[in-house]
Image (cartoon, rainbow, N blue to C red):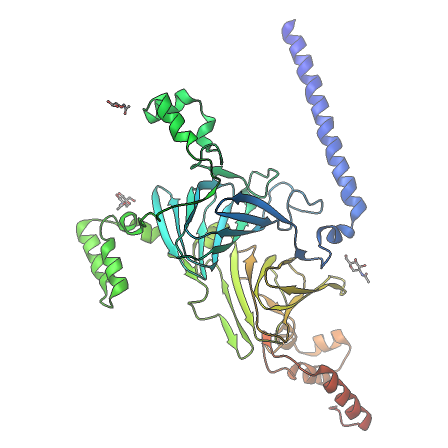
Length: 468
Ligand SMILES: *[C@@H]1O[C@H](CO)[C@@H](O)[C@H](O)[C@H]1NC(C)=O
Ligand SMILES: *[C@@H]1O[C@H](CO)[C@@H](O)[C@H](O)[C@H]1NC(C)=O
Ligand SMILES: *[C@@H]1O[C@H](CO)[C@@H](O)[C@H](O)[C@H]1NC(C)=O
């Protein structure tokens, strides 16, 4: 009898919950239907549809802060096609740390791709079972997997540390915050996850007294980013190589090839250089030769082939530097959504809708964040006042194969033929003349006096001297 009553109650409750869920879904669906094309507008800022300027301060502490701007596809967005999986969900974070500070050990429900914008850092994290430490300098890119504990120390003498990070939330818990931080280090503020266990459990697990547990967990109350009086000596070498690390430091100071010697010694002594094998060194975006360079700028794209850890987070990294007035030719990313952060200078971002109308033509300058949806044609133009540098992430670590629409290496050029000419409704020869006029590719020079040239051409046309 009692059993049957419970069954009924259970049925009733689940029915109620089910209709609740259903109702909620319908509501959301209706909202979605109703909005249709205005969705784009809803997300965009006043400055432009694809400018991200809704900042959230997720960490505020005595020694620094972390600000995050959410990427497109957050569960909060009605439009997002990512409701269930968060796949491709990427946020952009800005970590700013005073000199002599430590970002206390923690792990996140999101993978991080750190890029050192300014300053120097020492980052330590757990890679499988061992501690890996790396010294980072300006331009370094390093990946920290979700769920593994890490810390960051600002080692720059008297220098602020600025890190821009891609926060890969594709495996996040999907809670209200852009990401969830689980602090290992901590006490009362931030609260250590250890504090969630009862004192007896901790005392038993640690094999110490209750008092010792209380002292241990009550000590830290200064926030997630704290001043450290003396920078603790780096443990990099000791942990990295199990004893032969000194040869690395010798190698750094001299030109004698200690590395092969070390490898041989490792082999003889049976010491395996485990971390070095499993964890590639940080990849520096400035030290390498750019993937593309001409007189008007350069660009480098980093994918899983260049830096293996990117494969696990499935995020690519790129950096572009345009000379004053030049432009990245109109192109399309067939494989990824792109996020960009302006590092220096100013310029414009133009994005086009599928229906061939302008979706955005926005002015951007240092510190601005923008995004470009996959498949949308776009281009970046540097202002005439100076070089325009931007850096960012793509939501795929595979080779991106950007498709240039214009320029010497463009689709227009590759596909040139009767079909394309017919597609434009012009003769093949006139299309060829048009397409061949541009000798440069990818990054195109400025056209400083467009008005005058257009005027001149107009005159020529009147006088009948134009080609064809
Ligand atoms: C093109 O598409 C956008 C967004 O979908 C819409 O806002 C705009 O009105 C469309 N323009 C035309 C001319 O159809
Ligand atoms: C706990 O600590 C005591 C000494 O303080 C030691 O004798 C004992 O072996 C430890 N127990 C465990 C399980 O480590
Ligand atoms: C390296 O890894 C092997 C197993 O993969 C292990 O047996 C060995 O102890 C490790 N060596 C070091 C120095 O950590």
